[in-house]
Amino acid sequence: MARIDSFLKLGLAQGCSDVHLSVGVPPMLRMNGDLMPIKFRELSDTELETYILEILTSNQKEKLEGGHDLDFSYVGEEGGRFRVNVFRKLTGYGAVFRFIPGEVPTLEQLDVPKILTDFCDFHQGMVLVTGSTGTGKSTTLAAMINHLNQTRAVNIISLEDPIEFVHPSKKCQVVQRELGTHLTSFADGVRSAMREDPDVILVGELRDAETISMAMTAAETGHLVLGTLHTTSAVKTIDRVIDALPGELREQTKAFLSMSLKAVVTQVLCKTPDGRGRRAVLEILVNNRAISKLISTDQTHQIPSQLQTGRDLGMQLMDQSLLDAINRKQVDPDDAYRFANDKRKFARFVTDTELVPVIDTGGNEKLMNQ
Image 1 (cartoon, helix red, strand yellow):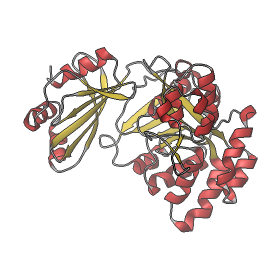
Image 2 (tube, one colour):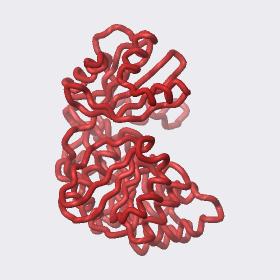
Image 3 (tube, rainbow, N blue to C red):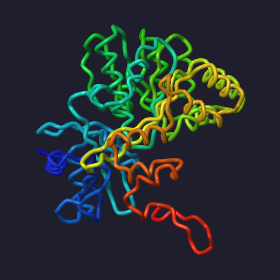
Image 4 (cartoon, rainbow, N blue to C red):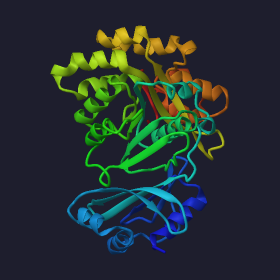
């Protein structure tokens, strides 16, 4: 058994989401959003290097020694699948292991709004799941693929970096391809996928103009494209896509988004009231005629008002979703307050008074500990 497996085994036993290994500090576990050190000595550069090199292939070692970061999947000898990032920093090596559950979750288990199942029924267009790093985007997309796999007889091609949840083909054929192992770039993967008779293409990350352009082409030519972006609202997602492409393609991009963008799901992970877990809270945009017009006429700043009034269509602003979760006692009010945009609406729920704005002697409002 690789020595690093001992830390991973301990992390799994504690129910953590990530294991952090870094020179100069003991191994750390991310528990419900917070980093906690385990009772172990500080790791030296030589010690951590031997731990990491022990689990790498020769090709991975060569790439790491060439100054590149590594992203790969790792399965411990005693079970447990992890998404791994290995990197170099000032004091030596560092690594983060994220636990990937062996069983793919369902949308019902995630307790997300039912409209996400409706998004899986689209036959073409683009659905984006967005949020900051570590907000559960991959888990939500995996649950959507799982729903498709159980309900539709289609060909799903998933492009990932690296492969996280493993989807055995059920009603669907699920083809999973990994960046660096099976393809050289997401853009090349989408280009190849379009020649492989796909019905659904999942793009792990729309990270550059070429990938976005290829994904748009796929969505316009009769495929359902699922993808992710590191954006924190529906409006920022639309603006990011428009700004990512060259200026001469701006009008073409707006036309695509107004016609072929089906939905945007933006999520955060909030602690539960007992502090023992986290749950996804979602902002949801469903494209309709009004939103399509706002996109095409450069009025995306007015989209939040459409989300606020479109609840009968399944839409909701992040603040609306957070307030609902507080009222249903699903999330910790203090944690929800941190994610809220209009914090005034949440101040009455906060129990940690240091989070609430105070008035200083100059009459100015300040946020404590923000």
